[in-house]
Image 1 (cartoon, one colour):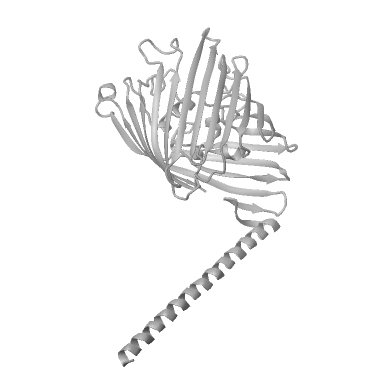
Image 2 (tube, rainbow, N blue to C red; image 1 turned 30 degrees about the vertical axis):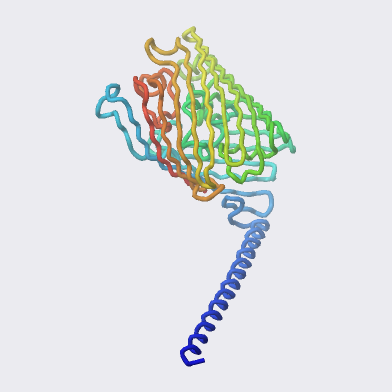
Length: 434
């Protein structure tokens, strides 16, 4: 073996040994890092169990190590909206409207106090829209403030301000919708927030909820407010026809790693009346209103379906008239990968022909399609959405200053309203949940 070959052999052996040593060193470092993470996790769990603070089950938590806990979380959403309308309907200047907005930025606290059986929730929102009665300038409004006591494994009672158990589409929180927002139909028939009391009986397969409240969309009202009803009652029944995990239906999405197929079927009704009490001139609205719904949700591994029918009977006692309005929604989502989800939705609003002016369209259909990208697979923590929607008929009956049945918080759906068909709404959205 000559000198050059010997040097080459020694160099090769040294490189091989160095690579092996580096691999061993990296392996040792990885093992040490894993052990450190496991020890840190055990320490955090131990601290929470004994009283302290840390990150637990997806939330920041403070605990006294016993019955008192405080979780802190929230979310915010940023959107870029484009509304495209017919120039002949709204004028050349207004046919394209675009810009950014923040429909909501939420903070919430929840936990237990006195006993693990006594839950509480406090949630507020900064909103640039007027859905909660603010000026549209980022004002802070209370959304939820309630306590719930579990009497046993089946019975519970809740009091405070919350969403009465009516439309499932509304009961699912903003952050966990399939599209950028709920259907337009839900903005007509939805219950919003109200103050009241409800009782729930829950088993592995059924939930029965009944309660009394101030009426639909009566958040943050005083007891003498004319915006309330004189009385209101809400009841809902849910049947978990397939599956065993109720928490699967806290959202509309079904990730690819879902363990099994689940089916939830529900029905609900709400009755409220007014016109007989109130300290202000005229008192509460002199009308009786019945809102009702049936719905079904199916979730499988990587895809989901949801459908609902809505109805409302309005007896305007002051005017001596009554109307029946109807609505429906069907939507579904399909994951192409663990992070990319396609979705589509149809929803329709069918107003009583006697309610709208002659020549105004009373049957209005919307189509929506888009894509979601989940930054972290199987998680809503950071979600990006791109969607486009179209109104197949004119929408002046529900959007704009001439609306006879105005949509609650109308701009959040991206439509501004016009007297011709085919308004297009494009939405780009980024959402963070923490």
